[in-house]
Length: 168
Image (tube, rainbow, N blue to C red; front, side):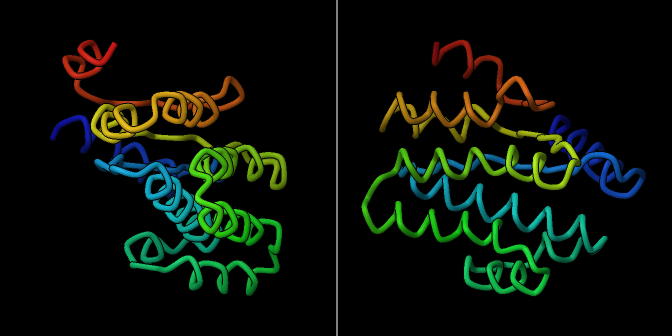
């Protein structure tokens, strides 16, 4: 759609034309389980950080497991970031979806504090991605979005205004 193309172009421009912010484009999908959203978001943020650091956009397009991403982070001598994967696995083993969401949502803050480069989040289809989550666990959805869109981050979010207004 038009909004998606605009966000992707903005991301590409931020990726190639500057080095002062880490651009992260995330297109929400209809995840039925909160832990699935947490894992998908974690993987995408980490892949995009790696791609930005390496100036290699092909990293973003690759299907990578958490184990692959973890190995790439260790290659880059960043065990702190790999710790987010360990925390996610622990939350998943304990079936603690809220902890998994909180961990994933806090990743941009860690990146900003650790690198000194702010993360700029471009959220696409935020209505689609959070609808199922709100049905499953309204509190977890609110907490994830609250943390991900914290005041300390610049972000833009797109979605269907009709869906957003209906969901209240």
